Length: 243
Image 1 (spheres, rainbow, N blue to C red):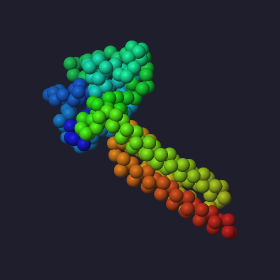
Image 2: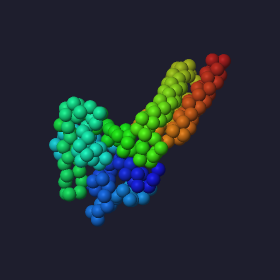
Image 3: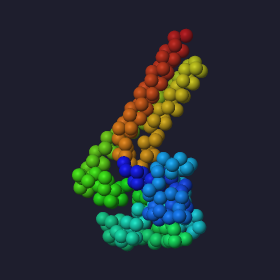
Image 4: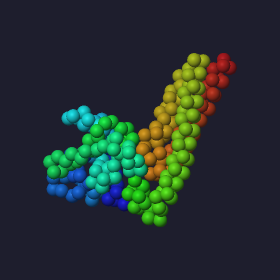
């Protein structure tokens, strides 16, 4: 992906730089970062994932969004909160608030999880996201490609979750049976690894579409580690029961 997109898209993972980034990432002497910033340098400064203030205004406690692209689409371009449902757009409205002639936020008239969560997703308008880089796709083809990848990765997520559950159940069985402490320790370590390989993709907001190869590899590792842990516990159980 192109460097400009990466600097901008870091905003869907963290808002640590919210007061150091001008609306739409425009270069400004008052802004530490901009669309033209080097993504690695920007990401190195981020310490926290998306947190409460992205969706809840800390001053008024009103529901809000902070992602520039969504505010621009809803307010500046007048597409509404639900571009394919004008009636719903009238029910859920957004008011753009600019402060310091620098930053802008979007205050909602009422909480709406679809809109509030959409600011962390690239799926608001495919013609303004995916098809900018994938110029050979139209919006329908982008939808098909996204659904195909996401459905496949969701299946892998579910499979990895199943084997994690099997490992946990087997650990409980082995501990109750009095399996050796060393075997239980190694099983806990296996669970830690398998859980990490699985959990990232449950939180990553594209369901693997941003990097399907990495998602597939990571989830396969999770499954393998869980299965290896189960095998080790079965061997420990066999030794315990043979005594």
